[in-house]
Image (cartoon, rainbow, N blue to C red; front, side):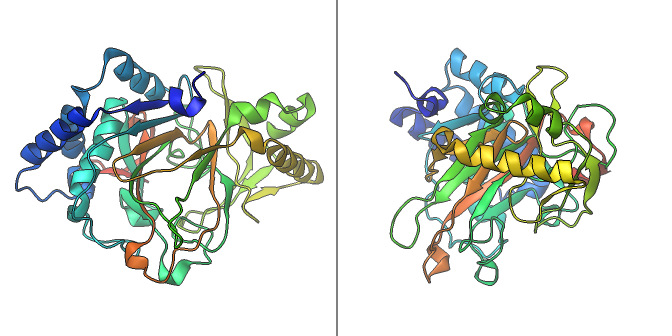
Length: 344
């Protein structure tokens, strides 16, 4: 019997991988693409190179995932690896050094029918984030940290995309998409990106807990990379108006999700205890150079446990992350002409 990870993994054959490399190198040519400027062009290059090696069923699987249906995560393995890999950067660097990987990352996003998106108040408005330990932030509870657990959470837990009138500007990112570059700790062991499906949590929740999660009695605090203000008087759980599935906004990191009354605080405690009780439902993903992971940020919680990156951070763990949405028209753009990939 296939495991859930195997069912959700598209594997590229070795011969197809070499053809994708050849096509990408030809399409990129001598260009020097920057993801913040050329994301859509890079996505079309990547989807053209990858797409012709996917079966009809694999294309449908990607498209279904991009519609927020089926399983809440998807993996592609066996893509051509990034050769001559630069040093792992400290926060940001010249993205042209990884344009080969970025074309594949953006290409997979395009094949899922999604659009890449950034936020003016997060990540300095940059489209791609280097998920890598920074020397000055190793104790930070963020993707630039390493020494502390990054507990179960959904990213930028504000409004849900396409769920009605936006009260707080642009919605939270619907999808998180990653490409692996390096993923070993100081001892040569891979570091997991762990996922927990919201449906697994809700299936174990009491009716009382479900009702409590839907009360407008919670305040959501911004993450460390987020300059936005907190939002208050919102529910943690809503149901998708299109599929009926539960959408959860929650952050288990200390001080990130606040109950505005005693009942709400009890609800947070009960939800936290429930999550801790279903560790057997956790899905660990180990991203390598040449692999892609995307998951639905509304239907999945994710975490990264603490790890030792070693003293040479130039060879430390490094993933590339891009947010994706179903339609950029669902949010408020800063400047649709000059900054087409940035929501306000």
